[in-house]
Image 1: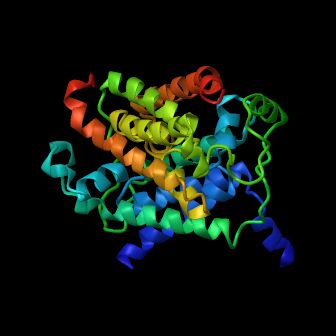
Image 2 (image 1 turned 90 degrees about the vertical axis):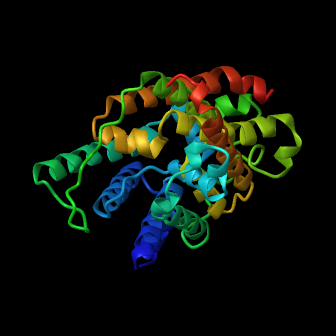
Image 3 (image 1 turned 45 degrees about the vertical axis):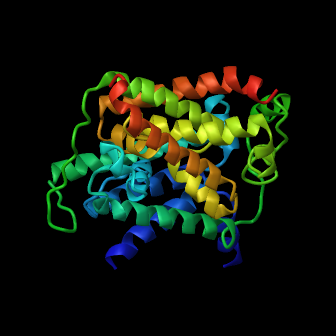
Length: 137
Length: 189
């Protein structure tokens, strides 16, 4: 049961990403060309409802299922990494039309060639880990 | 009953999707975790023995197994969506995008993905390597360098009003717009 609940959450996420076509290269192109509201609607709805929920969690000091208080840690203020890393990520996102989650959803959906994209992404993360001390953060 | 099944098998509207994604984020928060998918690549590197050569991958990756289980779920979700829940319809993108992509040599959608790019044959061409291999590499490199991907920064980060996440999302768009308008015409030429 401990393991199953995370798998179930992943299944729901995978289904919704596929059924709303957020895993499609076409939809990502449409987004970067500002020619449809679809992707902005998906991300925007998630952020607005997310912000509302986070505010409620903070206001009522809710706890998680382990009884621990829910805390939201602030991200460190290392500006170069966010803008440079973000730009590199965005370049890859527009090329593959897939951020990390959708890569795996696509693989399951039947686009098996995504295993190559996934392997390349793991190699990219490995390369970052190897040279990170030489990069501005 | 048939109408409901038809509705589920047709593409879902953006508001349904956005609401469920927020729901998934809250489920993970109440499980005592946080929603951020790209960390899985670091975990995969650590599991593969990366910690022996590089201290970035020398961490207690076993604490991250929950996220790998979530990852397994996304693959299963993809299988379910692609078989039981699919009516096989093509992605209905806007006329303007159809025209722009047609000028780049990408045909109108017949399914979820353009077959010119997402096929094994594509890997026999330089453009295919750039799109799939270089593209994947940059997603893996950039998400860790930038400290997160769409789920960690755009959804979780913006929901908690993190300025760093807003900066990262601006970066996503700088890279995405540059690629779309400047690089793609060269790559797909």
